[in-house]
Length: 200
Image (cartoon, rainbow, N blue to C red; front, side, top):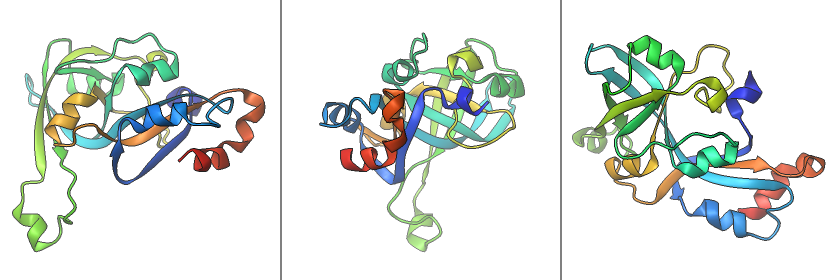
C-alpha cells in the first residue's frame, strides 16, 4: 500500500516555505544526480476545504497537489496532467462528494504568509483564497490517484490541479514547496540521503 501511494518517489524534500519550481531542473543537471536518481519534479502540496457545488457537500483537510506533466512522468504513469481549471480526484474524495465529470468544485486554500495568522497583524488580512475548478475525471490508485507522502492506512482524499493555477491564486508565481526525486540504479539507492544533501 505504501509503495503504491508513493509511486516512484524515493526522496521528498520539503520545508516551511516555498522555493523555485525550476530547482527540479537544476537538480537534474547537477553533478552527482545520476546514477542515484532518475528524475525530479517540483509540486505544491497543501490542504484545503473542498465544496461540491452541485450538491453542496463538503470535505475538509483534503490533500491538494499542484502538478504538471513532470509529476506523472517521474512516476511512469500515463496520465494527461490537468490544465486550466481541471481537477482530478482520488476515488475516495469523488465518492465522498458524489462528484462526477464536469461538476464544479470550490477549494478554500490558505494563502502562505510571512505573518503568523494568530497575531493581530495576521488576523487583519484575508489569508484564504477560493479556487474554482471543474472535475475532469477520477484517478484510480493504479494511476497515482492515491498519492500521498503521509503514512496512513485510511483512504486518501486528494485532488490534483494544475500547479500554474495554484501559483496564480496563491500569488506564488514559479514557486513550489515539495521536490520529489525518483531513485536510479537500485545498487546505489542506499546512499540517497547524503547524495540529496550534496545536490541541494
